[in-house]
Every structure is written in structure tokens, then in C-alpha cells.
Length: 392
Image 1 (cartoon, one colour):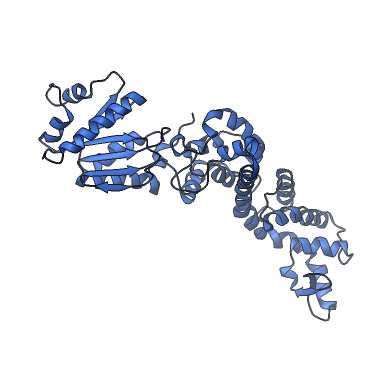
Image 2: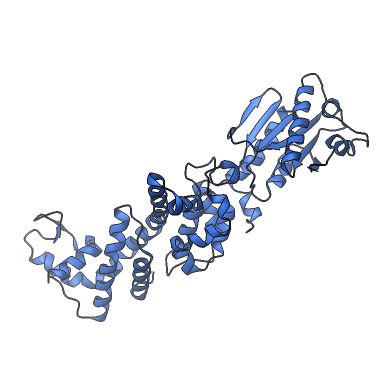
């Protein structure tokens, strides 16, 4: 398992918002129930404690409950040594506000914790103690926040929004750009990690070529924990409350073993992730460099415009139709077309390189324009050729 950068992660709005909810809601609740998936983000328990401390509950009692634990006995150790039932805890008046956190280690212990919490909840109806009880549940049916009397329910699965993941990956990869002068590696990691910060860390440990060819590397990533990704389940972390998109490894599982439209849609979602990364990075990267490439043909383009009665460069806009553009507005594919029509030539080495870039740009831009993921080979070729001629 790859560990997240906890210091960075808990500064992001979503995780920080979770701690803020803990601190604000504990003030008006005797019982705080946190609904978590079974695979929690590392540091979630620490986040709960930090939230309590922000509410001036400085030293919450943290208990790890196992199947053989007597909860009342373990609680009592921290309250004078005598056994303390849930009802007695609810009535207890401490010198300052306190909180008890129950953390179950297995399914039997989880049942015991829930029973103790329920008894505490009932007792708060007639008791006026100042001890709060914080317990976690794993419930697929309550994927939201709610309030019922003295009970607050907060749902948290650790998922990051798109903007949060972009920020997390950008900082984690601040010293790692590429391929070439692009930032495509970062965008691919962010898109394929989606909401999962731990998976982002796994992707960060791939080398550049593996990230660039991430679609070919998905079988290996799936094979590291194949059982987890078979079903779409919030409790197992294959989906998140922050997005409608399933985890990419669940999609890949469906793309390999699914049937009918489920298989087709999963493949499309994987391709769309790669397309979005290219749209965010390659499109502006190309536009930034367009004039630096086209400039090698400006003398010829100006001559064409001077000789044309319309005073511009004829650009096809359909069958037997043209529009006329300024030489500075000529696109990569226009150069390739003009060369193919023998209207311009490329005698010098720089012109030959520029022409090659214009030709390599076409399949990449066509794919992006038609919502398709460009091939890795086409991207590598284009970036390599561009950086050999243009370095901004």
C-alpha cells in the first residue's frame, strides 16, 4: 500500500472540511457517528481527533475494540477504574468536556460498538452528562450527512474532487514534468487517480513511460488486488461520494470481464480519462507553439496572400469551399495541405522539421477534436519532434 502525503492531503478543502464538520457538530451532539468505507484513507482517525481538538476537546479517549473486548470495562479504565456502561457514560459529568472514540477492529467488534453506541444514544434522552461518544459505522445506505436529535451523522470516504486531485498531484509532481516540455504526466496521473489519493501515489511510483502508456499498464495494477475491483461498492472504495465516476480499476475490470454495454461504457470511460488529460495539456501546448512552427513558412505564406485577389491564404472549409485567413492564423494542418497542393515547399532543414511537426500534429489534434484519446506513439512522436525545433 502506498502512503499519501498526509500533511498535504489534510490541507485540501474536502479533508479539511471533514475535520471542520467534526469540530462544529460535536458541539451540538452527544453522539457523533462517522460513516466510513472499510478501506479508509490513512490518517482518518487522526483527522477525527484533530477535529475534536479544534472543538477544545483536547484529550479524547481512543479505544480499539476487538471481538473479545468488554467495552464497558475498557471505558471505565479512563473514568476511575470501575466498569462503565453506556448509560453510566452518558450520565457522567467530567471536569471538562470529554469524548470517547470507539474503533472496531473486526465485524464482531463493530457490532459491539454499535450496540454500545445505541445504548448511549437512548440514555442521552434523559441524562445530562458532558461526555461525547464518537463511533464509526460502515453503511452503504447512508452516503450523506444527517442530524437526528442529539445524534450527528457525517459521511467521509476520503475522496478528492477533480480540483483537489489536480492540486495534490501538481504539488507531488512539482519537480517532475514531461514528456518533453509538456505536463502530460501530471494530467494523466490526476485523471486516472480520479478521487483516490492512495492510487495517485501508486501511479506516481511508475516511471514516465509507464504513466504515458497507462492504459497498457492497467492489467498489472488490477492484478495487485483483483478482488477489490470486481464490484462497484462504496464500502470497498470503488466509488466515492464526490463523483459519479467509478474507480478506473473497476472500469478496467468491466472492460475485460464485463458484458454488453457495461463493457463498452467502461472502455469509453477509460479512453475519456486519457482524452481529458490530452485536452488539458496538449491542446494549449500546441497552440503556444503554433506560430513558432509556422513562422518558417511566413515568407511563402505572405507571397501567397499578396498574389491572391482575396488577400489571404485559402483554407478549405468543405467541398469546393474556402475561407481566407491571415498568414499568422494558418494552422498546422493548413501547412500540410498547402504542401500537398504544391503551394509551398520545404527546402531547408528547419522547414522540413516544421513540416514534419505539422503532419504529426494532425492525427493527435483530430483525435482530441473528436473526443478520442490519441495513441501514445503519436503523442511521443509529436512531442519529440516539437521539442527538437521549438523550446519555449
